[in-house]
Length: 59
Image (tube, rainbow, N blue to C red):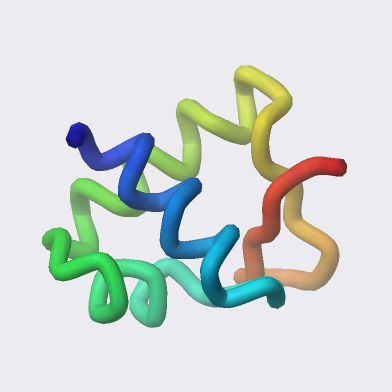
């Protein structure tokens, strides 16, 4: 499972918006990797930021 999938899976199980650091801790992935994955997933339209510095799955 790559970082993108881990980010999505972590957000799905949390069921709420999370910060990059929280996602990294929960997923057991380096924060830099999570930040790269978030940037890519937002560009692809899979994630959005409902509040500054928080990310959630786009519904």
